[in-house]
Length: 324
Image (tube, rainbow, N blue to C red; front, side, top):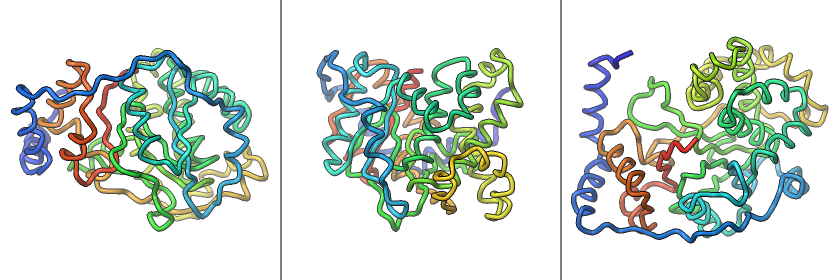
């Protein structure tokens, strides 16, 4: 379906009013000459760690603070694109007080089987791995808290939220709050055991039950079934309800949790950051999209100093490689 003309005009006007768009436009003009780039180190060395080893120290997190944990997931611990290895290392270098975990597909499934066995039939029923890679983020943040970041995200500045930021932290992308993708799932943070994530899981399971056929799920897309569209819908529905209504909706899932999981649950409304903090690169902005496309076409990584100049208010930037 073609986008309505009014929405196209609104997006163009927002693009022209965005200060960062003009910084990016100037960069693109000079970039034709300068071609600033970083060459990633090529390596097949596996990232150290595993779910079984990592989980030993994850259960002790303070419910009233953000754990010093950054969670990422990829298909493999060793076969990782060079740009992803490079961007992952920026989280390690920029956040020395945090553990940066990488779990592969097998780790993710082992985690769901151990901690949320009741969800395994739905988890296994997804037709492609990207659905599961989306889904596991909600379960991780519910169980352990911390910060989740996509592998095509670069850390420009220290990112660990403080206790005063809020119990669940999301971020809006772009200038249209009604856009279906306006709350991406590329970067999310939370204290442990926040009910919002169980609510998101509830919505995810509802979507799976509503669309049980594999081909229909593929047609609907991971964005709708497990990803950013579902996250925004969960956010909108959650903030429209009071705590009692949320708990009533979640009663069937609450009964499936362990006693420890139930007693640790905490309720808080999510904090929604301005896009300049976590999503300074907005793929709906025509100037931003040109930068994304150029970097993707050239298979190029910008020096971190360039990112800090282009996005002076941002702790991180996602380059929207859409590699799945």
